[in-house]
Image (cartoon, rainbow, N blue to C red; front, side, top):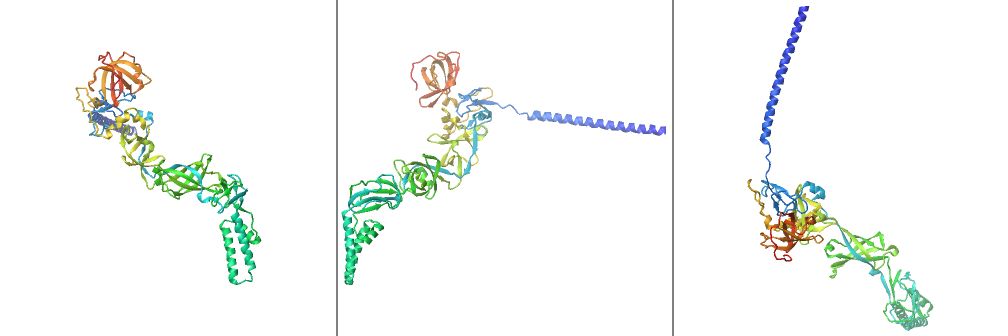
Amino acid sequence: MKASNVIAGLVVLGVVGAGGYWLGGRSHGAGGEAAVAVGQAGSAGGASAPKARKILYYRNPMGLPDTSPTPKKDPMGMDYIPVYEGEDEGSGQAAGANQIRISTEKIQKLGVRTEAVGVRTLGKTVRAAGRVEPDERRVHVVAPKFEGYVERLHVNVTGQPVAKGQPLFEVYSPELVSAQREYAIAVQGVQAMAGAASEAQAGMRQLAESSLARLRNWDLSPEQVNALVKSGEARRTVTFRSPVSGIVTEKKAVQGMRFMPGEMLYQVTDLSSVWVIADVFEQDIGLVRAGSRASVKINAYPDKAFEGRITYVYPTLKAETRTVPVRVELANPGQLLKPAMFSQVEVQVGGKAPVLAVPDSAVIDSGTRRIVLVQLKEGRFEPREVKLGARSENYVEVVDGVREGEQVVVAANFLIDAESNLKAAIGGLGAAAAPAAPAAPASASPQPAAAASVGHKGQGTVDGIDAKAGTISLNHGAIASLKWPAMTMEFKAANPALLQGLKPGAAVSFEFVERQPGEWVVTSITPAPAPQAAAGKSHSGH
């Protein structure tokens, strides 16, 4: 029993020893493999380590053709952007001559926002000024067709409302009295010739009918004619009544006056429906159609909108205002709308088909050209000239210049619209881009060739400063790039901060550009150890 136990113990020890040896070998192999892998990774890492790119020069962040061999800031405080070796226009990695690069931090601070160019239907509201006018078809005139005298006035004030059939005035006319008597005599003759021959009776009846027709042609009312027929007696005066319900808009009748045939004595206008004549501008008239609904607002009732319909577009244009009259008809309950009131008319019109459009805030209009800023990639923008078409409330059609899906700047695009930056940034649109600055050899500092064509450098002393006008007078030395002699002249400061800390007599080095003919602007000014030029003959500038 003891022997068997000893043998079992030896077997266990043998198994444990063999397992330990196997585990040790595996650990050693894994460690070796790990060491090899680390060595390989280290060698691979050493082989793929990127080389530091060489900076050729620093260029202006706003697209100005101005470079610097060392880091610096522009007058607006923006850092110049490094241009690395191999970044040229041919490789497509660097911005072109008319492109603008802004750091991501600057973009966030300035609140630059972009929106994609898209296809949309441009709905628009055509607005026009108008005036309320009576419906010409509802204006009625009372003008007797015979001579007479105004005997009595029943309605004696302008603006008085009247109902249809309401008495307006009474007149006396000798002709009218004679015509009534002729009719009465003819009627009596017809009765007297009741037993006469038929031809005589027919002639007398014809005479009576002619007399009655004459009275009717003089606009006697049917009631008055019937009363004359029944009584057979001529009345001295005849009453004229209102032909419609409305307002007396004109009254020329005066009690006792004499009037002639056809003379207007009263004008009565029905104002239950009125017109609004809107003057639509020439560029909008093509969008307006008869039958379109229109909303009319009156200053007297700012909380009300009157709905009407366009019934007629006049075929004539007013040369003085370049507008076309458009008639809008609308109901006038309560007669709130009064003739001669001014109104604002709005007509909703829709586009015919979807078009390529951008927000109107994306367009920079210089007066002669329309520019949008297209985002090429993060921090890089390109000004493009576009051709515009129809406009809506917030969008404008782009006929040419951008493609669908491109991102255009819709907020903070005013960045290039300050001082001379706008002209410099988009100057390359109409001409060939300036050649890129050549790469400088490793042993020499870069010498930007483009800067000399636009920017100029000089040294001198401060002669005077006008902080309110933003100008500085410099007694500078000769400017070789412009072939100027030494002289004293006045410059404008691109930024008021440039003038801070300067005092008359201080020696300075400065850079300047010609923003427009005869206007010289200092873009950079720094203290110099000593003035480099003698003062020349003073003059006011160029």
